[in-house]
Length: 213
Image (cartoon, rainbow, N blue to C red; front, side, top):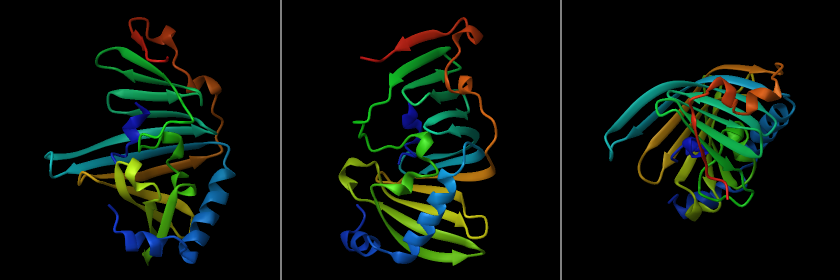
């Protein structure tokens, strides 16, 4: 269920080719990557918006994300998605269930997981600089392996002064748009490793559904 961040996420071939070696976009993304990798941890609050004219969906909800290396804890309405980098626990509050999965390096379902939210652009994308407006850079990302992805384009909005991602917009092949707007962004705070595992003792009535093979 780290598939939640499907950020639900085909581009016209000529556009993808032009986007492949955009030096301005590469320079901005390289600087962003260098800064982000230097953080020991990230705590972010965000607003998630999902729009789909096809399905008649127009939803907005708040969420929060804690990151520490490849560990993460995502909290959104009705569920928590927790990972220690090897195992993923998806706790569904309404049904009092927790689904357990193993993270596989071979996973290629066209989605990306929460720990990649601020670094998803590093591999597997061509990119093209769009514009600067009100000190915000916008850069389009196009997946190199478009056939395996649920989206055809991602747009990053990057604060020029702070060198931080402020918004991520995912354009799905099904016509949906998924937008993450970062409201607060804190770095290098102390986060205990216990935050990144599911503690059954705190949920004694939960039903465990182990989907690991």
